[in-house]
Length: 271
Image (cartoon, rainbow, N blue to C red; front, side, top):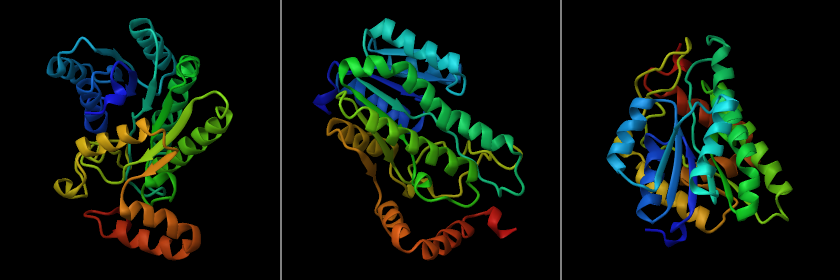
């Protein structure tokens, strides 16, 4: 339990599964107040029934739609009165060669992963300045290193990190902390819902999910980083090594990344 979040108001996008759901559970357990949004009403109702907490406020919203983000933020402020932390967690992945995919997949990746972060942050910013709070982006190593078969995902995470870094500098004298987190591979639903070349959910994961970091552990690390007002966090040793080596040996890392993803089950690189 993290006492830093007692009575704090935290907004989380994309919170009905995986990291978002685990963050919601951990903050509620710590005595915080949580407002969440998600697109799927059935999943949202199931989550409300599971947590059954007066400190949980929910809004059905698609973060790729500007008006939905505005409504999520405004309704959350009306309900709780303030925002201490905004966690831009909603995201979608994809897995297909660029030469094969429908170009709309890249647009959808940007609309959710990048524009969803921009919209929510824009509408929450004044409230967070008032509370001298924190803005968080849940990013990925794909925001540091372009990953094959993930052109849409990588470009959206690069864009997210560039946006947040510029905003961080703008907020230097406002008392607002702007940060992003790169969890690495975490057991979640994001790979099952990743889009294939036709824009359909691939409905399978190429990884052994049981061997990955749990969403619960990931959530605790994220909350610790927020409490410490970190700048950036790369969670895994593999991720830290990739980021460091890419600065000095980019061609070598290109080959290692290609080999890694080519060895995935049913890798598009094997075509």
